[in-house]
Image (cartoon, rainbow, N blue to C red; front, top):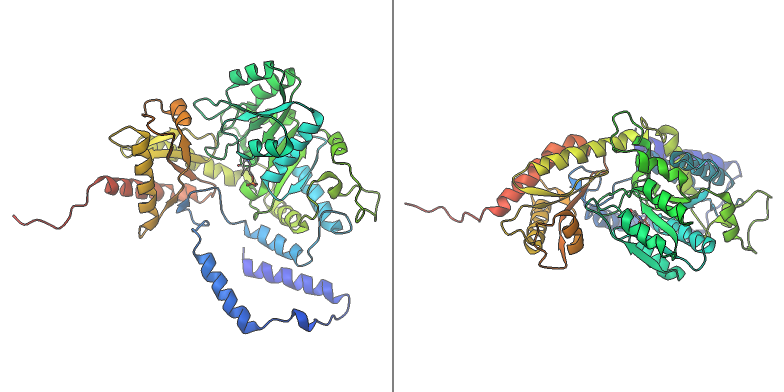
Length: 465
Ligand SMILES: *Cc1c(COP(=O)(O)O)cnc(C)c1O
């Protein structure tokens, strides 16, 4: 698609809309000096050019990529109007669009009668889920795996709820035996299962967790901020995610967080929280003296902790899902490419003389480290950092990330590595762009080349006989 064309269309539509209301006179106070703007714009451009090339498959680092151009067009079209989805008065049109996309997300995870809304991101969405967890199970704690996102421990602190970390197994998934013991203490009101950990993309056994937790009378919240959209692939005939049971079980859980700004092609500022039971709305009840007066329909602000929220985020997601729907052949096909790339790369790395795989990928995140003569965490740390720096500085650069990884995590996955320090950096690549699939051979070749060169001592000046 031609982005310039559609951006201009958005501006034109907006102009046509405003013109219906007759001419407006621009107040001189809003005028700007175009030369000043030109100068500032150039400085902005320069600043932005210092970013890593997130758009290019040679960037295989953190979970970041540009939004789909359709999302940018939807966002811009709405932001020119600037609706506020706090209340119907602020955003009647975009409130309807938000309700529509929330229903689509809920259908994807398997909630037939959901309550939910978009949020600024996964952090706020998880906070709301944990707030509802606390209100529905007062006095009890929250359990999440040691490799769950750090926001859970932090938000429990904020909410005054005891937090209980549960150990993980050799795949980075919650250890259900440890969970069973913890639930037996009667101190847990809510278990957080993670569908796609941030570090390694590990998928907790949601089905086993849901069985255990519900038997113990606890709620289950699924943090699928990263992995939620992979649900679209769970039932594909070639089973790209292996056992579909964890994905099917999400529909039996009490709440889910999914981030459209991670794998939903949206710009930052778009998370979502969904509840299976619409009655949890009662925990949000409050009186707003400013809003909620134009209709008897409920306003999204009545079921959200955030007040002002961008209607433009709903518009961007809505427009995107009209043309890239939440189906396996739709958005699923973009995720499937990254998943195939991760599986294939992991196999290439495992067969390589230069690398060891840290953990087999459950999704599209590959974790690995350079083989070192001394099999110690110190040697791995130093070789990983050197290699990442070399790769980024090369003429044909590739960019990978350096997650700090604990000795415990090493003990569970790579017990043969000597744990001579509390943590070590390893290498991690999030293959969230479908283009990674076709670029993979080059990516792998470049990493091997640089790893080989890093091992070989500098030959120095040629000697004469
Ligand atoms: C990214 C992420 C979060 C935090 O979400 P933000 O959108 O960054 O606020 C929480 N949990 C998981 C599993 C994540 O991947």
